[in-house]
Length: 462
Image (cartoon, rainbow, N blue to C red; front, side, top):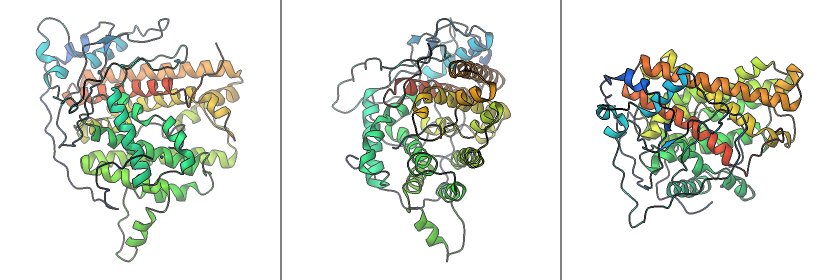
């Protein structure tokens, strides 16, 4: 995964630890909703404000069979961008706002998917509603095209933070005690809640939280500063990947493979996180995640090979590598975390694959920009887009960084245009909800980078 950090201890989560290997048992198939008759109206709302999901103060924790529900939406409008001098005034951008918002105007209330199918989530037992959280600190990269998000529900943030720390210490023994401060500084709870505000329960959020923490632990221990090395990386990645995609071998050799899954922290984390995930996801959702993790591991291997050979990639080569070594596994599970399923044939559409790829590419450049100074201060040579542009195009550090901002903005706008086109071409409710979910994840990912001042600081280029 892009720029990861060591991820540790508290009270044990009140949930049994899954067995070493859990087969992919079929999950209930959720029927899709009928086609929305006014999809053109859905895209035709050209009003500038963008309505994003509001946080819900609910600690409901049970994980029911995934309902087929469009995402919950708030009626609270917020500006389309916090960058007043770079608004996206093109038709595709406004059409994308329609994807997020749904139809408006007289006679369209029956077409409001969000309101019509909004799930009822109980308030916490014996708990008063959480007060609004103050805006988090953090400065956005100047000139970066992005969308603001509401502050995540602080009750859920705290609960996810508590549970993920319990899991990391009690179930998978993820890191030594001296890494605890770095784990806390990662702000996993905020990351999950701001990226998945429509998750029906905290258990749904925990599905994403465990996978995210496991991915970052592997990156640190296998690839980066905490024992990582490009030498022999392929063998380590392959064996770790078997925790996600199980080995089917003879009875004689199966016990040795099973024992290997507990041999280091990344494999323990992968095994446990995936065991939880397959029990909540459908078989197609689980296989989709495995596929995207294989993509991620291939990206790791490409970067490692360049490090071993001293290859200085062209800008286009770097961007190709980053399409694989990126955040894609995170938004690809947005429907599982949301408690519904985007059917496999719809997920596999080339236009849907383009949307997901562009989302991953744009968010990965966000990571390059916010982690730029952190990586320059770290030992060794770290590839990121500003560094590659500076070396290959003979630009100053400042000019290369500003050009990387432009690259991000073009990718972000291409993502929004592709999502709007797909929503118009295939206006099924599951597709529309998935597109909204991916867009919300993109916005939340930026917000986490902006507000995580423990990890990130911006260069002095303005």
